[in-house]
Length: 346
Image 1 (spheres, rainbow, N blue to C red):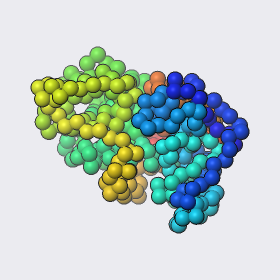
Image 2 (image 1 turned 180 degrees about the vertical axis):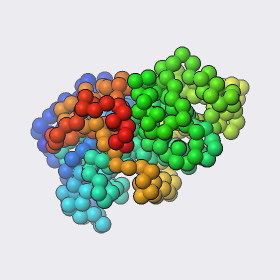
Image 3 (image 1 turned 90 degrees about the vertical axis):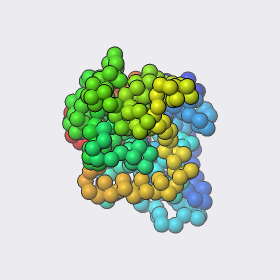
């Protein structure tokens, strides 16, 4: 089968298209799917750079998020039959391929009336955003949340959900993406690469700071996030490090940034706190049923373009959810429509 193989830990530039990868076989508790659409995520970049704890070692088939048709089920699997369409995550990779094995317990049915492609984000981006906002971030009506990388797949979902829960949203994005974020309902949008994000946020909140920060950037942005958070009661949920690693000391937590700092990895949430994850998914499907979250329309690319797409995501040059189509269906690349059109499709 065709697949993208990561050949080093030096980054996505060393991802190669191969045509002779063996079709995997499902284990007793797995399902095999014919991948029709694979989601592109920052996790894929972290794995390609060896930054993901316990990540696969090269050479490996890349990609963690896949949607498609079940073609075979393991001997111990009940409730799923060949022909069903599901979306799921395999943290060891394999989604950037024509076939992928998924744990049956985590294979979520594609909602009725949705295409496989439209379901991308349902098990990665959207649960991450919701977990950061609700069980971990404890957002409530009338509070203010700062959402970084608001034009990305997780950021867009977070903006829509935060507004639904009655929060005031301050979002960050590069200037070219501001219109996208405004169309999602953000109350304020500031330049993610501005000189002093913390000062702008404090100015918008009358010096008080925000109740919650969704921090996915890292690097120097983490310091700005901490400085922009309310003392004592403010929460910072860290779920990404697109801009690089950052450090905070115990001295800073005691004498400089007296905030509640929370780490989130959705894979660990699933394994270590399945009850909480179940509650998140239950609420998530409620938001889908209520029309708060609607089928997405990711920007799609042919499988062979995977290395380029990951490089653009790493450079933060993309908007919204990105997908690779292993079967080579019609491509609707970023040049086909502007950022505002992309936002309005979500």
